Image 1: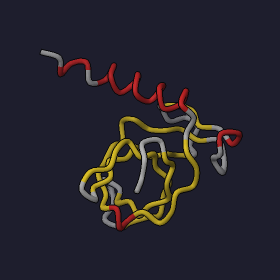
Image 2 (image 1 turned 135 degrees about the vertical axis):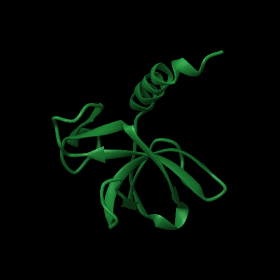
Image 3 (image 1 turned 180 degrees about the vertical axis):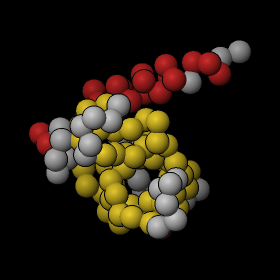
Image 4 (image 1 turned 90 degrees about the horizontal axis):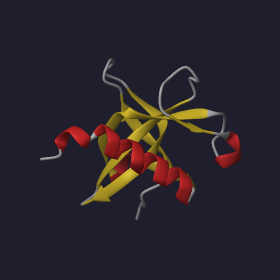
Length: 104
């Protein structure tokens, strides 16, 4: 059972290419074997929430909240580590800001 804030290694299909690659991602939530995740990149020039080696990343990285997608639970290879409560709160706050336009 995956939990929000798990950093996983999963098979991911990129929007600009047909092939599937094994990449890290952050679990936002899981429901009925569908896992909604945010991609992670090691490209420091990308916008997003920083994720450091001291937090568990293999190298300093960025959580890309503009790259959210759904994968099957079967596509998850393993859980690498779990984000701190503070980092999960940063993700939540940033997502709420970006979804603010949905308010009635």
